[in-house]
Length: 147
Ligand SMILES: NC(=O)c1ccc[n+]([C@@H]2O[C@H](COP(=O)([O-])OP(=O)(O)OC[C@H]3O[C@@H](n4cnc5c(N)ncnc54)[C@H](O)[C@@H]3O)[C@@H](O)[C@H]2O)c1
Image (cartoon, rainbow, N blue to C red; front, top):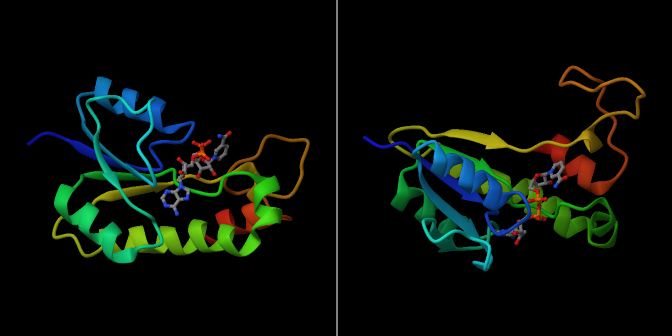
C-alpha cells in the first residue's frame, strides 16, 4: 500500500515545499485549504474546506484515509493575531481540535503533526527546545501553546 499524506494549509507559504518533499519521497499527496492557489503542484489532490467546519474536515480525512496528516493551516502572524485575537484562537485551536477529533475516528489512526512556534517560549538568548520555559505573550503564541 502506498504511503499518503494530507496537508492542511497547503496553499500557504510552507505548503508547496512540504508537498514537494513528500512527493519526492514517494507519498501520495493530498491537500486542503480555503482555496487552491497557483503554487499548488498538479499532483496534489486538493480538497477545499474551512478548518472550522468540523463535518467537512471529517469528510476530507475520511475520504483520503491518510497515513500522515500535517496541519499547517493557521492565522500565522503575530501582528494579525493582535488584530483578530478571537479568530486566531478559534482557527488555530478549534480548527486543530477538528482535525484531531476526525483523525481519532479513523479505523487506522493517522500520525498527526502540528506546527509549533518560538512564540510559545519565554524570550531567551540561548537556543530553544521543547523543554524551554513556555511564556507566550501574544494571541498567536498562546494559540500555539494551546494546540
Ligand atoms: N513561516 C514561518 O516562518 C513559521 C514559523 C513558525 C511556525 N510557523 C507555522 O507553520 C505553519 C505554516 O506556516 P506558513 O508560513 O505556511 O503559514 P501561511 O499563513 O502562509 O499559511 C497558512 C494557511 O492556512 C490557511 N488557513 C487559514 N485559516 C484557515 C481556515 N479557517 N481553514 C482552512 N485553512 C485556513 C490559509 O489560507 C493559508 O493558506 C503555521 O501553522 C505557522 O503558524 C510558520
